[in-house]
Image 1 (cartoon, rainbow, N blue to C red):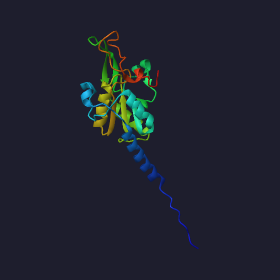
Image 2 (image 1 turned 180 degrees about the horizontal axis):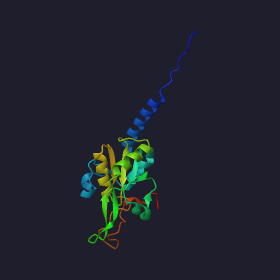
Image 3 (image 1 turned 90 degrees about the horizontal axis):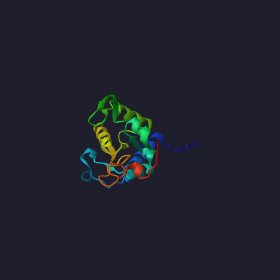
Image 4 (image 1 turned 90 degrees about the vertical axis):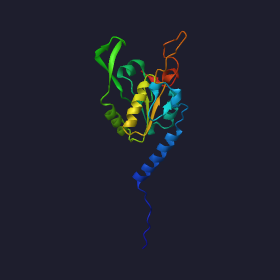
Length: 195
């Protein structure tokens, strides 16, 4: 009697290979028209990967399972101003120190979140991703997300992006709306968000 053998592939190997293929496809699908020379110094990153809010939305709608979208604003900002609907987690880069008022700036001082790296790694693991995953950071207008992106790059993450116009956008420099954040950004681009 002759036995027939059917090849039964190792499912974990197939899943690994497919995830590598899709991760590469996702990273290749990110379209940006920005470069360092176009940006203010406080928005520069070590990774030199920059997205507008519209470009971030487009990249995330391609395959949000292969990326981690992190809001790095304070909890109060997210609660009172709103948050992008596609955000995976809120991990503040800076936290308010409500015991220290800055008279000159007329606001509470902020300190760097000492748990930022730990919280980022935890959210990444929960989503089943690793340090090669696409990370997209957003803040109010692109400055803190650039700092968070730099920290992530220093921690060994390899595909780090910052949303340069942020959630609220940049301020208008002249005219009747001077000083207001109505220029660009997630909210002003009519992208999905919630309170």
